[in-house]
Image 1 (cartoon, rainbow, N blue to C red):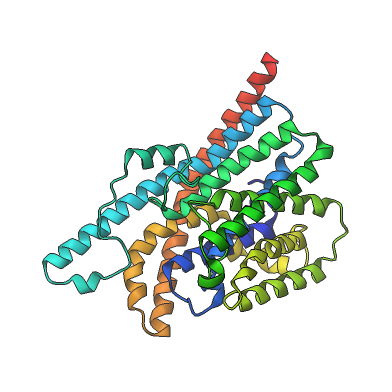
Image 2 (spheres, rainbow, N blue to C red; image 1 turned 180 degrees about the vertical axis):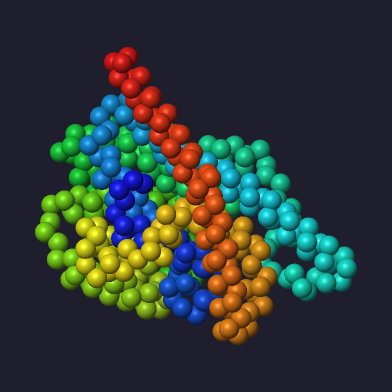
Length: 371
């Protein structure tokens, strides 16, 4: 995104890395890693903030909506396809290596959490990935590159946002946003408590292939409302940043003991975004540091490419029994992920996004001429 808010980019990068470490399974003694799945909600809230800021006044007719959808496809689809193919290749390579090791009596050397079956996508899995519907309760489990469920839900959240902008007056949008967010939060609470039993087993708001869409919609529209609030409030940024960090620390401190606290994370993320969106204050200055900016630029690649690397590094992570060994595995995993994500950003993300953006611009010009 051009002219990005740098502190928000830094926050996005940290979130992507935490989710990757959560799936790797190292550092689980720390609540922030153990509950790292909740950082997916930061992505959703951030998307709502950014998309509202960029498009709330630009979606006025069908041509605008078509161009908007094309841009969103260009942002999400190319890397989704690449990462899915990469995941299939890596999983099959890991399975082959395990079977060769087992045939030669070395099965224990490659004992890891990865599956022992080859990844051969079904026609339904291929179709749902290509249409980005695989996170909409089409299956009763996560498929292929499992974190990509959120890409599916986010894409159709974009479409919902575009339709709301098109079908409602600007005066009505705020109550509509609030209503949509409240309904989806209610669905998330109901599904987490009654279907997933999260009050007993933990993992509240850990909704993916089944109720991931209302989770995405709730946090997205919360982000949109956060952006709106930032335009109409004089913000004491330092106080808000301290309050947001304190709230996040408290949530992580108590969410294991009181699982329902997990429902508060999107609100904490919204507060942190509100406090840093002007790129001012102590927290914003930290997030604008170069390492976090690199992570932010590559965050989408980090998010979609980390699971194939987990299949490779999972064996080492399971064998790391000391702090030094864990740090070595973690460092190697992060370094590999950051390097690989830099390549995919340069050769897949950025060029395809630019191509789709040009196509969207031409499409909008063509539709304007017809009108």
